[in-house]
Length: 400
Image (cartoon, rainbow, N blue to C red; front, side, top):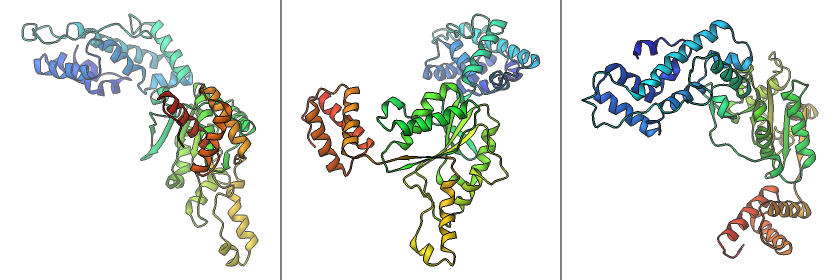
């Protein structure tokens, strides 16, 4: 195996930018013990010294390349398939060299730990360049997306590029107790979005801790297998919102453009950017981007009495302040919980968590928790249930 062949990869060149794979290819090319040792150390740190073929296949599978993108979109051409087939053949030859990396230095490498190619990855089979392998990979990309979108469903924006969020909430809609009408409204709108039906940008508003953000996370978790993804924007990134929509519009996924805990001052230039992105801009509403914002206020732009007192046309000023909220096609209110609703959520969570405590005692403790913590809400109920669970698991008294 020559480095020249690796460097002539047509579609999978990025795979060999992986430090361990590159080091192994250099060790094979140079046949120097020091290169062998470096490559072994790198693969050892990845638990791949005896499974190099599987490690290499994994890097191929999650690479963002033309074959994967076109397979997902269903627009592969024969030249792309043949270029990809050739690259797979080259890389499998490299994988096989792990069982015998050197031809000339057997004696010099005697006593060094040995590489192993190991078993091939299931999707790749015995012959990576076979028609059956290409068909399996096409089907995989068609169902799962490509590159970082396969393993990740949530992203942030940094320097104009998407960055995956590795640790995301695993909350489900079933975990969120009550608020059935609110959850149904959000979910139905997202289903329309995914199916290509008319949908509305959404504003979820209400008191803190009522489950607005958690509902968005739960819907994302449920529909990620159907191609739903989310990009979270910070408030200071709103000026670039149309540029972000342009970036996402070229990707074959459906994105929730998520803005959490949104509130703006009247003179904030980001108000104009968000208004234009919702309606009224030259940028058309995108078929694959939905704006979803959460706020503790129905009227996102903060209103002051001085705005009315200092304005000649006070009614026009008030209308301007309310117009941003009105541009969301769907607004869903998450109202605060009273005692009955709060205890209902507590008892449902206790049942799910199989807490071995009587209902009367549970409710009395939950009320004490709400008083100490400063209010009743679904968030407080979940915090209380987690606290009780930990106390019971450690066999210690529940002291609040």
